Image 1 (cartoon, rainbow, N blue to C red):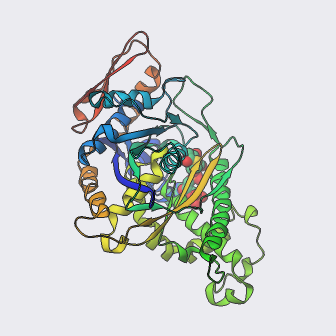
Image 2: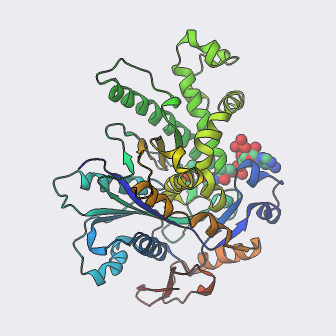
Image 3: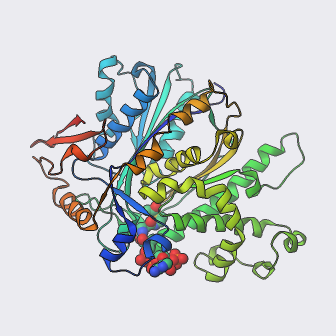
Length: 456
Ligand code: ACO
């Protein structure tokens, strides 16, 4: 099959949020720490009425309905998540309820987990299936979703929640480039979830930032050299840098780290630039010529210089993709794909046509990949790109229809989740009324931990 990629996307986020400026006051930190220091405006959160199963039920139902997709047309379904409610039973099997009416139970794939990377791993598996000898002509469904919550303290404002569902198949308006995927994997303890009774991760914040930036360096260097080889086929060898990508999307734990990541890529380009081109391309930065990348993760001089140097690139290539991250917060596995949705709803279709998008996926522990996709240049009203984007037009208005909650209520909700996370039998306390129409929610958990869901 040709032009394998993403045919349709659906994204959901919680119907309630807290204002980060109000969280600053409530937490007693300095004004601006969360909003300017982390770059976050609002944080979405789920009550005890929602869990990973309900989020995924909602996002898949909505994708199928909005795009008028037949449940019988799906042959592969995989869920990427790090929000674990069961050590054995996959979220994918819970989603099979949605397929019962169609009689389709011939669907490969289960769940895949490694921190925020699971969505990307699920996407790659879907692409592999479509490109394999097992492919039977049907479509693949990739689901990525998480509830990102932290214990009280400095990581808490970097929470969030959401889910994405993507339909994958041939002749797609968003085609994943072949042969340019660049991966970096390593054994680290920067963020992990060893306590199976708690929803909260064990985090070394500083180490996680260092691991993220280090993985970015490695993936970008490899991505450039692989893309150079691909471009070079039949052509003169040309060095690839950020000009090769029209948009650059990142996993976004918080927006400020993404802006620093763009600076980081510019630093990488700088290091790879031939000596004689430096004065013209990087005036005033020659003094950093001999830096070793691995010594610079927390070097303020370099960070400031390259933040300044890359400001325009950030505004142009990355900022539009941060809308959902800024308004909802970290969605872990869904985050990078929320970035893709943000880009698609922030630019006119004419501006998107034919563009190449770079994507950096990072999951602590750690696994990371940089890859690229190409947006179709066919943009007519009947085109698949037009349809894909039109079916995302509800997202911006929906962000404004959310209910604002007080920080006190958010803290109370976190406490309720904490106390009841593994309780059985359990009936959730929160009212389902605040949920958006069409949302699946947890009705009850019985004494054997079997969860029942209903839909608003
Ligand atoms: N006005 C403006 N900026 C401020 C203010 C203020 N009043 N106060 C602080 N800041 C700035 C700081 O200078 C700092 O900027 P810098 O990043 O340029 O140094 C930033 O706000 C954050 O402040 P810190 O004191 O460094 O933050 P803290 O140590 O409290 O925690 C951290 C930040 C580590 C990100 C924490 O939120 C965390 O652990 N988060 C979860 C881990 C995470 O997301 N890691 C990223 C990759 S892994 C993953 O995706 C889960």
